[in-house]
Image (cartoon, rainbow, N blue to C red; front, side):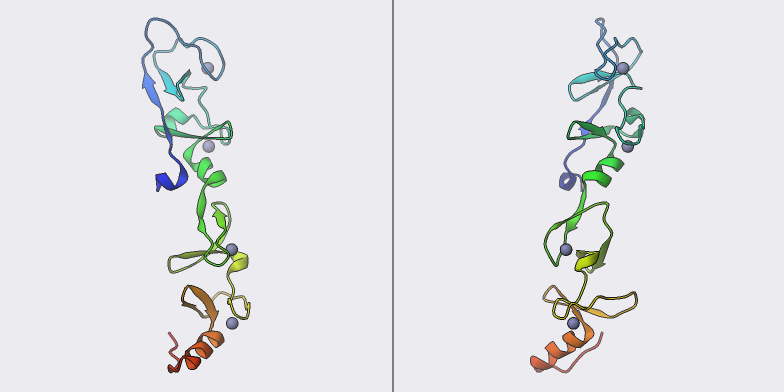
Amino acid sequence: MLSRFGRGIQMLSVQPDTKPKGCAGCNRKIKDRYLLKALDKYWHEDCLKCACCDCRLGEVGSTLYTKANLILCRRDYLRLFGVTGNCAACSKLIPAFEMVMRAKDNVYHLDCFACQLCNQRFCVGDKFFLKNNMILCQTDYEEGLMKEGYAPQVR
Ligand SMILES: [Zn+2]
Ligand SMILES: [Zn+2]
Ligand SMILES: [Zn+2]
Ligand SMILES: [Zn+2]
């Protein structure tokens, strides 16, 4: 799962050696007993925060995520930059914050989830069929089966 979303960056809690380090967050010297080392920089435990939710990253887990100069916790990173997968209908990426429809292993944009022959949209409870990875309404599915000479099989 991690590899699909880019890799988190390890944070290390280290004890400072004799020479105090400057904090990459507030630029002051770190005199605490412990400091965080991440992205090849040193940080106060209070200064390494998620740019979105302000949580202290040193507490949330041992990884942080960066993108576009933002430092983010895993949850916000996935919410903002993660992807659910490729829409099986239009094959564009679906960002993690979008609502999706799922059918078997496929995911679809809400707007793309329609019969791919007649464009009929489905409501909750409607029957839909997957054939050769195409979404079909019941009518088109059965018609397709007739053309192929099979007896319709309603699942
Ligand atoms: Zn600091
Ligand atoms: Zn966050
Ligand atoms: Zn789509
Ligand atoms: Zn149809």
